[in-house]
Length: 131
Image 1 (cartoon, rainbow, N blue to C red):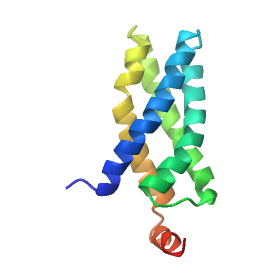
Image 2 (image 1 turned 30 degrees about the vertical axis):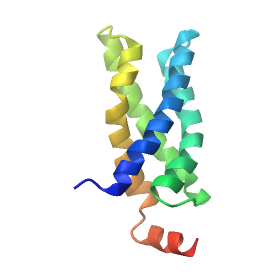
Image 3 (image 1 turned 60 degrees about the vertical axis):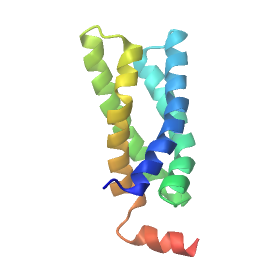
Image 4 (image 1 turned 180 degrees about the horizontal axis):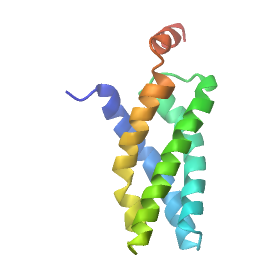
């Protein structure tokens, strides 16, 4: 059975994805290199996502987790750029490449956020009960 938290993650992720992909596509349209477009979209997306994902998905708005959150998104960004580069090497359309990578990158992001940011072996349960 799929975790209810993952379902919430997908809905919140849809909102975050619309925001992030819109930034990425707009930057490509104005002539930015795909890696710069992905970087800017990721940085702006991280700031937007931190609160929406933390509060709405993991019921945790602890600002001290921002560094871990940023580290997770840094890893996600690196993976994303490596995959985009593979698409570029085969002369694949970079708009479509970005769209294709949305779901796989969402899965990577969820696993990293769940295991390394918001679920800290019981600490999260204590923090949310006291909030």
